[in-house]
Length: 383
Image (cartoon, rainbow, N blue to C red; front, side, top):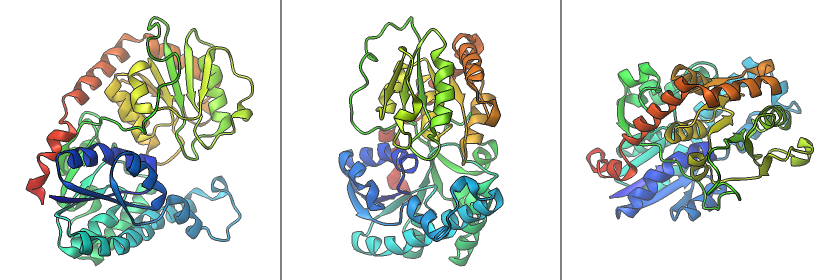
């Protein structure tokens, strides 16, 4: 079977599809992955053939705010949400649909698997008369910018003659990597879900020194604020100081957006790393303090690790709420994020037996979900 995968060109949208794409390739299917060229090196490392389609998120915001000297945090929320709606609901889908049409004509896929943030893949498949299924990257979120995005997408879909709405992905099958107990209940009730275990994916690399074979009697906290704008030095500093004041070790993934020098001198029990193979690291840690990105949230669920979530934007707030509702962690918002608050919340999460039971239950739930290989075996029925 010939399968075309397509997603937006950012880690949080690309990585979740790679386990299924590589499993399809390993099963002997002809797999090609379409996204912006910036992500092609990652696809090459995964052993997947890539073709160019779409544009990067940086290019989208550059087009939306061309000539605007304001920083992102200087733009009023209402104006920003409207722009995000246009970018994700019209600009990106139009560009991907346009770029994918010749790819589909040449490769003649039997099935298109499109990431939920990239409905342009669905639109291109619809226009070509080819079956398509969606693929999630986490909990399906509503509210805030998503209302603006959904409104634009649904209007676009109606113009193309698609029945239904994006809330349930036009009634088409949807590969859902979110455990049902923490997925949005209204989505679980309405959608045609195809469950897939969130196994995680990281670029190949070695774990930081001291992680493997360490003394598990001393806790290890992992701190990350992602790879995008959420990674701000002042937030990392507050979280780092709070964690470092506890009797544990702290591993910090600073990401590319932080000037490490701005963090100053760090305590002896803190280890800074620009990058870590996160999916390999999570089973070794005892607490994850993070921004609420879907990949980290689901990875911690799978590893059975408590979470302290420090959401900054996008779907991070609903992810934080899902963690709390599941009894698997806590959150700190805005001015609540202080070193003292991080220390107190982290100490509680490491010792709370109810939290331990909750995260253990989530790990068991994830382990019971179908593997990528099992889901690949079902794909032919949708082609």
